[in-house]
Length: 183
Image (cartoon, rainbow, N blue to C red):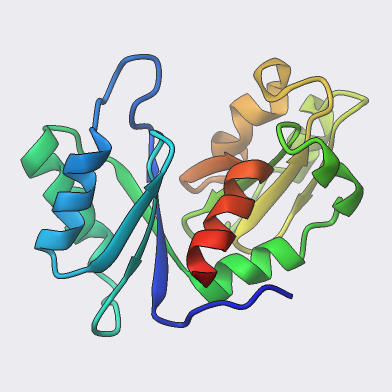
């Protein structure tokens, strides 16, 4: 089990820097979080992955505050999900497809903004390709898509079928976030 730092929070911003739209430069993202009082702010790649230290316990509104700060500085208001280092580690440890980590671009976690009240599991099962496997957990949906995420009809419909907002990351990114959380 990886060591985690209880003061570290992971922020996952949804839908930024995708296809040349909703551009948020990482330097400005770091500045936004620093202005909110967060410390040791680090980003990973250009798609909204941030680790930071909070000098105080995060409030329920912290995700909204981060989104509003990014909107003010960058003109883009992303969805933001926050995870403690321990929560991220728990999601990693619960991976139902450990054999799939050897090809991290084919294993994805859809982080759920809330526990789904009534996910349409039947429709998910119908949409998945014969090669795909998925497992729905309370705050994550794991999807192993050996043919690629871009070809997955299930991946394209996850948010609609679980009924809560989601943001997805591949296993390589998740491992990097774990590394950042334990530094």
